[in-house]
Image (tube, rainbow, N blue to C red; front, side):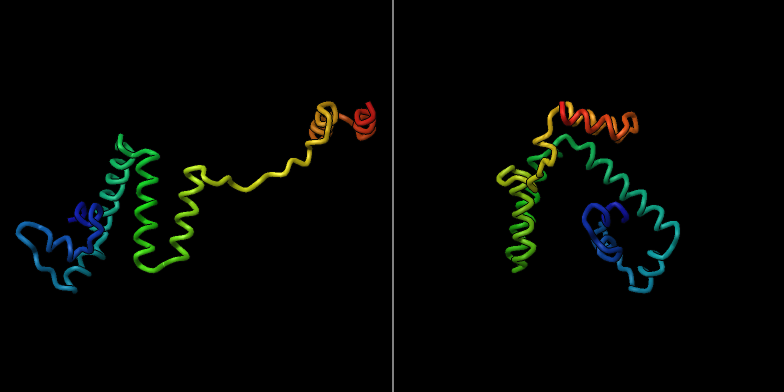
Length: 138
């Protein structure tokens, strides 16, 4: 039952109903079983087994992730969650390189290589401040 729960996103009672033949669990029985330490350990192990299988799947690649994100955006739109839909589409656009990430400003763009080297050395504590000033004049 733990495997059915993990792979299909079922509750314990839903997994019991999915068995062949179906098993009927009362709410109290399901709660009692779910609270057992041994059941929690089995469920935990089953989740990790499933995650490892997903990781080892050769079909798990960038295209599959993009397709999954597109499907998620579509489902969000169908549900009327427009803000979440826009966020998913924005993420998709970034993955597909339709838009660039945040622009970076290079504060060192006007420095000469010698000045950059002097600053690096000063940061490392190799040069005294006077040597840095003389490097900037050269």
